[in-house]
Image (tube, rainbow, N blue to C red):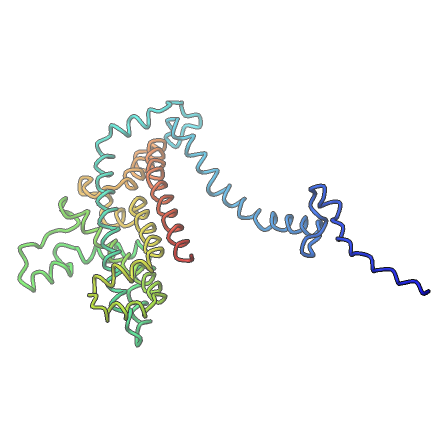
Length: 329
């Protein structure tokens, strides 16, 4: 009698590598060895190192140096300035010039942020449906933003000139000579004249960025809302703005932070005058540090301006990130 063949042996499960069973990482993952990983880490450190050095030299060291000056009374000459503790902050809190400049900064932040956003959005919506010549519009509107601020301030100073300036001449030509004035020499109009120049330069930036965002709006939703009877403001509020809101918040953050750091236009056009009517925190800090040789007091004010701007920047950055995550699902 022929013996039956033995049944095939049951397949055994593959043995798990001892390294994984003990909770250790295997020597290679996705074909990348540990030696390769070490080389990648070294390469990453070498690539990042120049940026770290630059940040340390041009940001961290000046910041630490500024913090040191806050607690001493440095006049720019004495190599061993005396320690005064928090006296600079105490004087700053009681300085009426600082509070007047802070009020001007608030006006600048409110008007200088809202006006470019509204006007830039309106212009972008008007050019949105234009295909022919849209590049020309972008260049024309964006050009003031890339021009040197010193040059812009000088040119607009000529426009505001009381006797030969274009603004007063145009007002006289249309019969409004009663409202002509020395725009930069009048305490009631100096700040707003400089602010109008700043708004003119910022509109182009807002316009170009929002116009680029409008290119990604789903036009089918806009057309469907038009068929449903939605008017222009309703389409803007419920269809267009939600789709461009991350970009809109980003532009708002850049424009708003610029209101804290404003200096160049005010310095060139009025120098903070007349009688401090157009002073902002930046010009007060400059005059204290470099005209009155109160380096420590000016540095204290500059750090206060930074401390005021950082929370707004962080908050708007978080809002923009959250809106971007919602848009990407």
